[in-house]
Image (cartoon, rainbow over all chains, first blue to last red; front, side, top):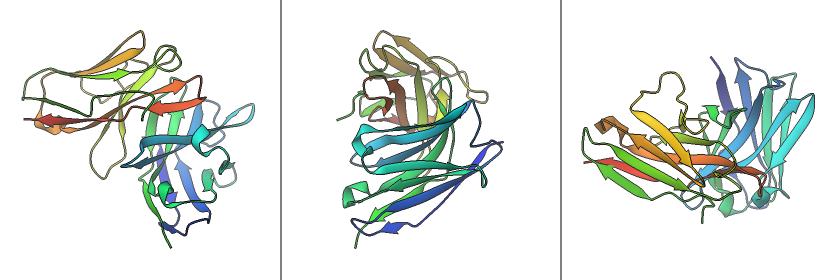
Length: 121
Length: 110
């Protein structure tokens, strides 16, 4: 059974960096058949895919156009987890952030518990 | 404004069959697999359908998916009160090089 456990602060000041971590159990961040994704949800934006990291002989990253200049997703093979960093946040980045495992046929089959993040001073 | 469009709401009575549509374009639904998710308040989405019409184990066969051209549909037959939830479609978009979600449909069981 795959489990994804999220951790990180729920409050971030404007212009600072949002940092979240997703610890994986039951699978490996270096798996050649899965992708590791960050998705957020807010009343104004709905569900929004932010990006992913995955290994297919080498490391790949894909990021949503809307956040491409501000986002970094990194795997940590030693701890079997992956992280999200979103720079220069504004109140518009206030949302519930989820990590999720993606499979080859496109579905997200396991999700973290969600982390509500508020951007406010 | 979502790249992929869903009706904001749908409703039905117990036992009825309800269909939720998802309209996209050639760069997303028209050329990639569609998945559907069910989400209850305060919880993470759960996959109901993947690869357009496949159900993960444990999902009742009352839920079915289909795709034609640039549109997809989720059908729920034998509607139950516990089906009252939000439903989202998703697909990879080749132009955006990312996953796009529909805006979601809130299903009410009358």
